[in-house]
Image 1 (cartoon, rainbow, N blue to C red):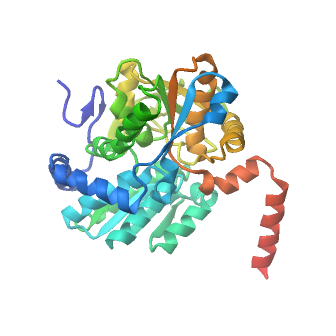
Image 2: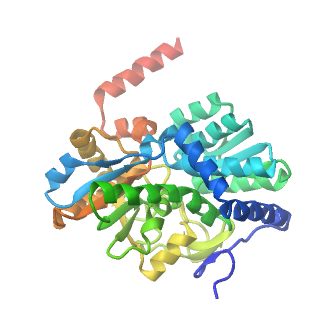
Image 3: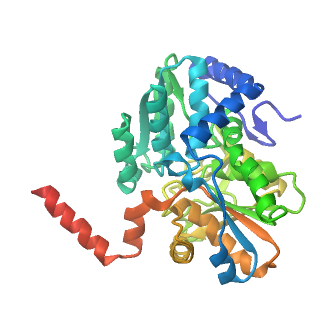
Length: 409
């Protein structure tokens, strides 16, 4: 029998005593909401009027012709309000916060999209808001920091450890422990202690529910394969969930290969050799760690994928062989980003582009009557500094230098 809060061998809730009552309260409100059709309808109504749901499923005709194989469809979470799938989870948790009667929310963020979404939700619902973000990510995602602050959130740069996502999560938990009466931690991905993995996956399931219906209308049948990038795993769980029990649908999660999984400079947990089972940040999963259990440094061109752990639900699906995991290198990501922009006029986020890499490798070997879906979890606006630098764009450099001169006057 699987223990409560576990998915096979993974999951659980390894939390300090001071948070036990808080988690019991959260679980109660979540389970009550989950059993209440009126709550889900309220959520759907909110997302259809405040965000952009249902988001389109775009047939990428030019890319399909370019590769000459499978018909490529892109689930457009980039068209969600705030530019990513993150709004789905955040707005759902915001409705739970209202039910719990709390007045303050905190969150961690890596790529900044979860931070922007949380700040947006807090502004709409009238909550105080604090966002924890690794100092490295603050620098490479400055536009998102700007918008968080303009919407009234306090952004706290985290200078401990690798100064990235895992360190931001640690700081957010420290805050929560001392402010449990007024504060809810809006966890951003399908990780962490139970019930977060299940709860975040439930709110994100709206993505797969839509894609299932859209694919049947546009393509006439289920997709042969579905691709999603995997950091923590929320967008992957969102698109995978509805198709898990569908015959003939292969699910592929693409991790951050960084400079190559053989280099040690990556964030590949389930398709590399540097991860092992462990317990950290309140749950058990596969972590990038050494033999002493110390977390390893990670690397990815995408700020949202360089997390040391992964959803316990995905660890379970990996162990069962229900999801295939691969990795995409930084260079491969930049190459497919360039191709997608020029062929389709669509700008994926650096995170999302990882899913495109494996899809583009597989599509030419498939037949033209097969369809594949790439879950485009976000758009590339937030990555403009990183992308322009990677492309070594001379006009962008000139623009930045000129602006720096103007600001220094």
